[in-house]
Amino acid sequence: MKRLLALLATGASVVGLTVLAGPPAQAATGCSAEYTITSQWAGGFQAGVKVTNLGDPVSDWTLGFTMPDTGQKVVQGWNATWSQSGSAVTATGVDWNRTLATGASTDLGFVGSFTGSNPAPTSFSLNGVACTGSVTDPTDPPTDPPATGTPADVNGQLHVCGVHLCNQYDRPVQLRGMSTHGIQWFGSCYGDASLDALADDWKSDLLRVAMYVQEDGYETDPEGFTRQVNRLVDMAEARGMYALIDFHTLTPGDPNYNLDRAKTFFSSVAARNADKKNVIYEIANEPNGVSWAAVKNYAEQVIPVIRAADPDAVVIVGTRGWSSLGVSDGSNESEVVNNPVNAANIMYAFHFYAASHKDNYRATVSRAASQLPLFVTEFGTVSATGGGAVDRASSIAWLDLLDQLKISYANWTFSDADEGSAAFKPGTCNGSDFSSSAVLTESGALLKSRIGTADNFPTS
Ligand code: IDC
Image 1: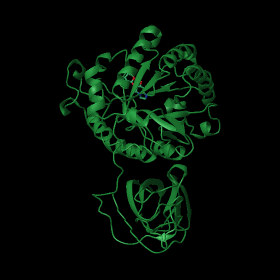
Image 2 (image 1 turned 180 degrees about the vertical axis):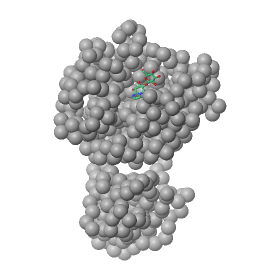
Image 3 (image 1 turned 135 degrees about the horizontal axis):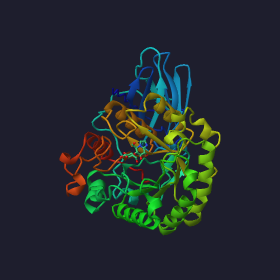
Image 4 (image 1 turned 90 degrees about the vertical axis):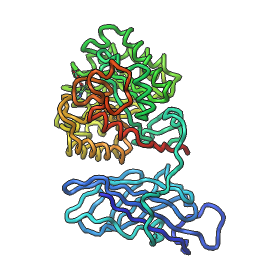
């Protein structure tokens, strides 16, 4: 459902408007607001608002609008400080989008609830100046010119800012990409041709390198697997993609079982890749059957090992219940919020499988996203077994939510495994075609279409 509202004003009033340059006799004011409901479910919805300043530059702004139905409430918003009093909603700019030049836009959004109907808001205003007028042509929205260069070139060294992943310009970014399957099994899927396709055709921002520790993985040949991981880091770097180094613990679920291996592995890969800008470390894929306290203890021992060698890289910590922020073990994000890992520049992993994990998991992510830096380092479009049918509706609801919240993701898997989560049909990796639609599964086609849209990474 897409509703567009656009409001234009040129005008006379200077009420509430901060003018940056030169005191004109009458400052030009005006805004357009493009309101879009990106998904809606029983009693809830997500909406995005693109605000464009059509007047003189502002160094501070507050957007106001009115909810027409008394049951409509903003539950949680992003990219602004949101509040609501009765039917009046306000959203005030935050550090990185507080200044809006003439013609500049910023994207805000919120998760809302409603009881009766859910009509589009009315009476949009910017800094108290009512924006009235005609409707913008939705086919011609104002956009920033696309940044040129690869994802790693444009964004450079990443860091965590607030709850977001930020680029070298200190602006939030969302990376969208794919995860390998277990590299001990699917090595033939990760050669030059397939990674060229991932970078050039899929326009993937990242490659997650899933290095299982058990199941014939790292523990059987630490040096060999370390070499394989480094090789894939280099191949991602050569194609301008980020590389997420995934220490793929799964069974046993207590990451402390692999603590010594993790220290050995991460001290080696962090030293070897310290000067690269494209590396992110994921220290435990899916803790399970273990308390958050035990996971936190593991993280607080492994992170210093990484920092000693590579001080500025982002580190991602798995969460309880197969990286469900505890939900799959009957808990929720509060155990992390109340007892966070004692380290800076870290994010927390959230995983889901769209056919198994639905509204209550999405509600958890919506809530947690304003309190914890989240990275969906793995998700599938199918059931948690990795197989079964693609749940299209749930997958799209998830991807829309992640886009709105600017949460980065990697999809399981960029492989030709004989299971519904694989992007390629079985046998594809024996051939040389990784680009045509003929080799894609339903899941692969869906993900390629989502990942391949323009990134529009901010560059200032
Ligand atoms: C699955 C693979 C499957 C393999 C199995 C056991 O798809 O081929 O036999 O692991 O190693 C996860 C895990 C991920 C799982 C995936 C699907 O991180 O290793 O892969 N899954 O079951 N968490 C939830 C689902």
